Image (cartoon, rainbow, N blue to C red; front, side, top):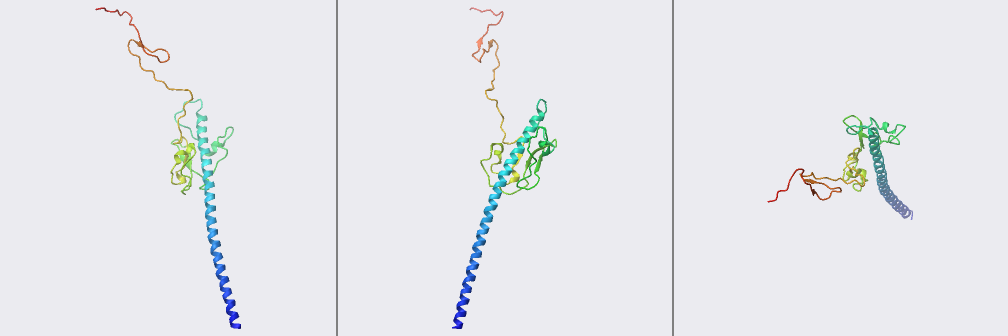
Length: 201
């Protein structure tokens, strides 16, 4: 009887041990899946933050150049020496100097030939989740392999020329000898040449 009871107790302990190990494995798998899902959520949020801040910097560079050039005849664009210059009063173009959301530090700057900052890009080489349907300001990001390929710059490759509403370019054909163009672009009307006489055969 004593031996049988000992065997029964050992069997119960073995089953309990197996159940405990099984529970640990299940908890580990669930924890790993939750960690991966959390990583995806965090990356998507940082990606959206990168787009928002990058576009804001791109727009600030455009406003800065337009403001500095206002009323002046200057070739090309004008760029700030640093992002801090975009935040200076009395007319700040940027609310604050943002850091790279994906790289968690300073941006990689795209320098103009004159030395000013004409664009920024992330230092991260991670693969973005978003591949298509970008905002119009950065629609050229379609299919880019890494965040490092997202360059927020001015002028932007996605920029399109703005045509004033109601302005239609018109071409006036050159007039020929003995003709004139009527108002409104009508049909040419023959004009008599001064001093020319009609010859009747």
